Image (cartoon, rainbow, N blue to C red):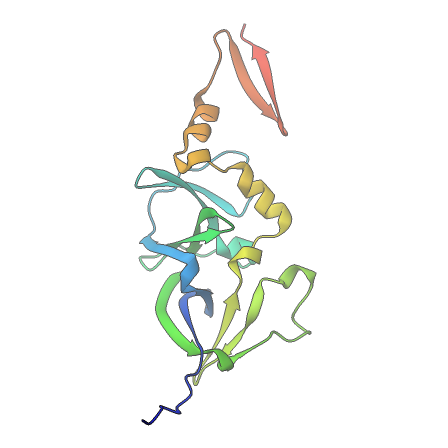
Length: 193
């Protein structure tokens, strides 16, 4: 009986997307779906990196603009612009990207850790750089992509049950004879004249 002595090289399967002219990769296991850009409902007083929310089959999903997360210049939306719906620490979030270019398998040994020259305390989201024949791809850890402060602000938009009920209630609830106004993290009732 002959045993196959050929070693299998561990692989990573990635969803590759572009921002400006650079390629980024995320583990395919974190991606639930990729959708075309659709109407985004703006939500007042959200962080600048939040574009708003979308209704995805009855579920309200916050959408973040990855260009703004990385402090890249704004770009125009094209027919290639996509929303990559991902799971970040148990919360579904839509990531707006310029384009999704491919799903790719790469050998794990083609990934090098990021150089200490390009890493800082705020760049722990960098998993490494994949070296391919004709290009390099920056690999991202989605659980670390948002800073603690950004994640906290985004979780404030969290919709319990994923149905958007709390956001809808907050946006439409007005007790009789009073108007509600948010002041920081406190809600203030104002008597109507």
